[in-house]
Length: 393
Image (cartoon, rainbow, N blue to C red; front, side, top):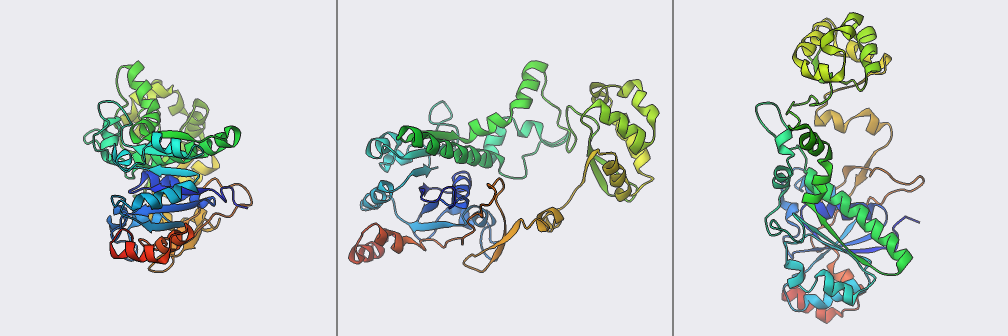
């Protein structure tokens, strides 16, 4: 039996954050019924066409779900939503502020009608406060939480290369829904879970917040280096490739000088005798390390680092990542069906031993509409009428 087998999730979701949460619930066996706009569906379906005509975001976030295409503004949509929610364990939505209430899907109303329901509301900035109604795309949250101010190099700030605010919100929604289900087992009652992308990414900004708040200045933008640890980051080998390494303590620093650089005197240089000194003198430290590494290939440098147990890596592009031996040899890549054929997908992390995740197909818009409505007891005549009136698709 899968861990979440028997749990039904109704997801009024779009874009990244809520779909990321519900896909993980689906991975563990929950039934996820995704409500989409008739015809066009979740707008993330149209971000790009890079996966054989499908959107890369959509195929990542929406496997193993059932798609019900429903015009929620039509008066009859409420009958369908009532039928779904009567049998649901979880309802999650990430509509604009106030939209759920206008559709009679606000938390207070739902908890009165379905007291065992876990209601998760995902918003940009939270359900109150002066920023409540601001648009909250991932980049904007990265800006407002200060992430962009500390990311990039000395000259140019940069956003993270993936949707970290959405992913943070999705992860907290996922873990909080699991907590809500566990709590319901003990109390018999559902709960309301407010998740904001701002709060979620704010939690991830803890270290720079303390660094700036108590140290007086923010961590410097250092590109791929670290603002508070040295040596840490990329160094050039003699064959033109970059080796990334990280020294975590004084014991490692001494071993690095003795066994990797084979320059033990460097460990006693007054400029480098502590991590704080090394950070302050990073330019000269970089030059000293590069002077040794330029006489070796990247493979030779990494071999020394491995034998000395100093953390290291080589920068891989995404094509190399897809073929990474750590993924391939551990069978972390499986096939998932889509409307355009099978594609590769990564297994979800953190599965209990002996549990095989659900890796079911990615649905087309409205693929399961009729089967779900018939399951809810609606007659063929009603379903046909709704199709003609474009209430469903």
